[in-house]
Length: 327
Image (cartoon, rainbow, N blue to C red):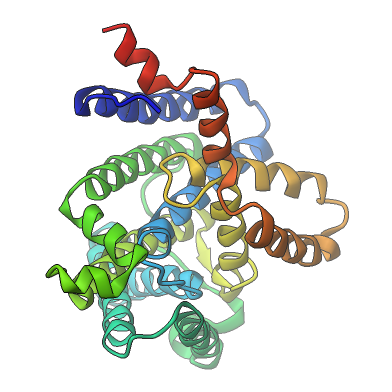
């Protein structure tokens, strides 16, 4: 593999982000069906979830199985606070994001201090996911329970306008992710993932960096959950359920490629394409996705993006190399 300059690497990375932005900008314009536009919206939302999980799971091996709960904390906190204060929910978004960030940071801090393994973190967070669902259903006077909690008018009546707003936020997510992973934090994350003892021996503060990853991921998840709730217009426990959120995101991220910028986008696109084919047999969704997740973890951990990258490198078609050779 030929070496490329940092400048060329940055050009290629930002070109990928620009390409995704252009594709997401064009897609709704060629789709007249409201159902198809909703599908595009969901692809963007779940790509956002996947990118956020990539930060904490892909780079620091903290398997969060309460993405739905964090998204729900953001959504319900924002909606309930806005209703109580009689203001637009746009004003209370920081409250939902901050609370989720506090929860994510606390979980990562405890897990890092106690040196939880990936499995223990998964069990711990799955327990919190189930507890959140019970809370939402049990405290129906506060959350609306199974009947749902109506979100106040957000002032955007056009689904197309809201889609572009969320797509713009996702582009911001990609820029933030790229900046984070190519900073000293990214270097520390990768060192921790490779060997915690070795990372600690060279002065990397494991607890600090894992907690930071948890806070950032939780805040991004919460913001995505809030926007998802705004789009739905009413919050239900099922929107943020483990089956609806966490299972799908794990498959998308693994299929697309962990620790890659485009992995969440590719994974979300493929999985929603499969879901469209299963629309007439919804009872098979969990079974098929469960089997797919097992197969991916056992035999296809690198994901589509890395496989394609390796294929291009073998044939000297890697974008970074081509840019370097032509400059």
